[in-house]
Length: 219
Ligand code: ADP
Ligand code: ZN
Image 1: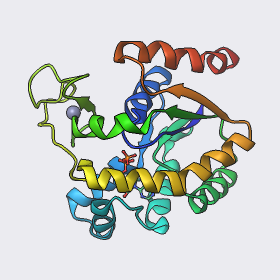
Image 2: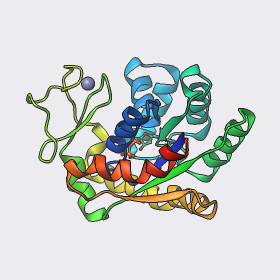
Image 3: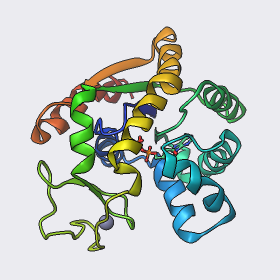
Image 4: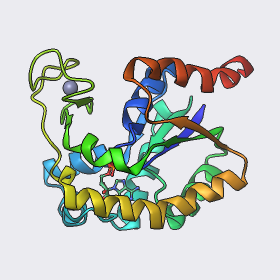
């Protein structure tokens, strides 16, 4: 299956994307993680991306499109993938149409994680992230077993520098202005299914399985 996942910052789309990736055994391509990795390695892309990310703005399209295009051509994507964080504006959506068209692929499903904007600022202030494997935690709702340490790989968790309140508000605005129109486009194409971002953590797997069920049975 080829899936896109949408949702504002703090909606829990990353957690759901990783769950779906395990469930369907397809890779999750998270542009935010890819960019953070470029930043921490100090690559040319990373150096350019950092200033935008620190402000909560979108990194220039050419950079992100190049990263995604290269990633989608790797062999592990041939059996499907889930894209988290891309496309984020209409130009990126056009680029994705072109890339998939050239590869003879089509999208199967677009998931939209719906959440009340009021709760995301609190959520993001409690979010911790594993810079090594990308696992996501919430200090209140989904804490790691050992303080500050990733359950999955043992690395030390960090708080993302763009999870500060003023940057979060900017990211939410960017989402409303630039990413919502992309969602409209996929709604017109009949690809969008909604999932709720505000349910208790232990109910997430069941909801995700429920929405994927028709597609799993079809295959
Ligand atoms: P969130 O969805 O919680 O805001 P992400 O990890 O998806 O966080 O993205 C963090 C930052 O990385 C964004 O604010 C933006 O600067 C950059 N970024 C990620 N994906 C893209 C993209 N597709 N296009 C441009 N910038 C991106
Ligand atoms: Zn980890």
